[in-house]
Length: 286
Image (cartoon, rainbow, N blue to C red; front, side):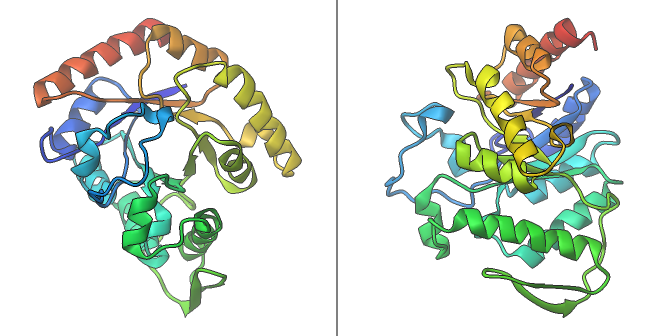
């Protein structure tokens, strides 16, 4: 089981390159960066209980662009997997996103993971002029178009949301197709992940019969979609995690765990990284 961290990297924290080196030196496998382009002050959308509920944490307002963070993180490290965890793809242009992701993957030597999500904050969608109810269909189609741009020398794609006439688009990724992690925990996201994602990447609810129930259900969905269940692993992005949680993830066949790195100061971030390192080593022996 791979173990890494995810962090809402902001201008008040360690910069992504410095942080990535600290993460790599402690033996972690990955560092993922979430995305929020901005947060409208009129908070019409409640902060989901699944992520903690209540008042929206300040770091949501200050996050760096995740692709820029991945670039700095990849440039500072040699083995660490870097990823968007997750990019709000419906709010982005598919062609530019394909170019950025392929560029990071090539310059990092094939160490990029493309995490995408449907998004929960309706307020952001209004600013970008994107229709919130159709975001699931749009993201699915954008991923298909991006995979086409990554893999075809002369790429074309014609869909409801993306239309690309025959085009050249280099560089291509080092990985033929960087893995697509689909974030989100609900049954609709599970179905989408089962049908077209490379990894299902939920943030589990705080109350947790989740693993025991959701992972078997997901594997049944993968099989029903005509795919081999073992070919679509489950990743987890918990907001909190102790040794017992990590042991449960391992026992349930979770392939990849990225634990939230939340701290108020750069020094506190390093202290928390040390704690997470000790936890990982106590469970996995490495």
